Image (cartoon, helix red, strand yellow):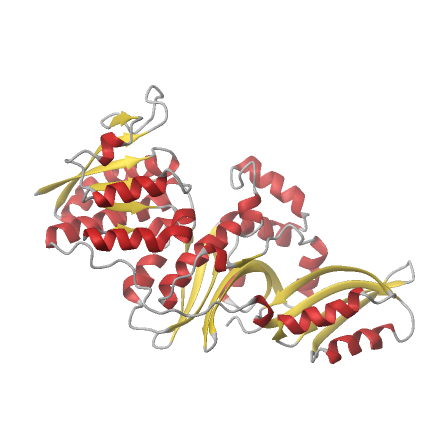
Length: 429
């Protein structure tokens, strides 16, 4: 049986999970891959720190002891961030090593460069763990669904925001209160900006869209908006409309190009994604041949993410045994334009407060009519301060039209406040 040696760049949560899976499932893994897989070295910051699961692994704080070691066949990058991870991966590929990475930030910005380096060197670069933890969505898009023209993907791909919105919906709590709890439970970082402002999901969407539509999409192409402005009132109105609010990552391939956006959205309860709660992730994919399919599971954690890392290691060992490395790398052969935000087309939810006087609603309706927008539903609730809270739900329109209407609304002297504007994904199925 062939022996293949692994070097880990990083031995934190995912690194320890990866090592544990390789050890706990050693017999099955070696039998399925016809290979003995051994972790030889792991890069850590402090080699004196006790690390359970690393007793038989050589620890080093010098990356070159892994990147330049001729006995190491596969480098697994788990340190995250852009640099030095980018340089380490390029060095590994240039030294003839195959690479597994879980680094969504790097792939969303420099994926093309890294995949090209893998191609030039005839080596594999696998990255299942970069999106949605243990859900095998990357393998599905790179292999199982390649007979399809993917027309859309809609996903819940950030567990922190899904936990927050789920708790707000189920318990009627406010955003700040649930965020604090999520931080205490370890579901949210001390600095939660990347999660709650949609940046983490935006990076993952860039990777998924590049694979789904076979065109280069970077994080900078993705429109990203977070959930910090969602209130318990918005949650209640969504429920009244037969809907829930989710942070969605949406990619669509249309005649005019590719649309990529991340934002909180009102989603009908009948949609399968409406029932994805807590820290779980799911991606709903539509293809011309397969129709509609959904991938669901845990989106983070030592073992779910480690499962994806190990799956990539096993696939690379199979490729090495078959002499077929480097055949599954960049597939971005199309060059579709990115659709501008003004041309996003969806329904909209607008919650605002106006003076409760005659002709006020008629004037609001006129602003929207002048922009070519009609209403799907209207909720109006009088208040004790001689004002009215109104929720307007529009039929699908271009975002440019909506901004035209909101410009007039914001200039209206009978307006007290626009509380929130959310996209209403009536066409998400």
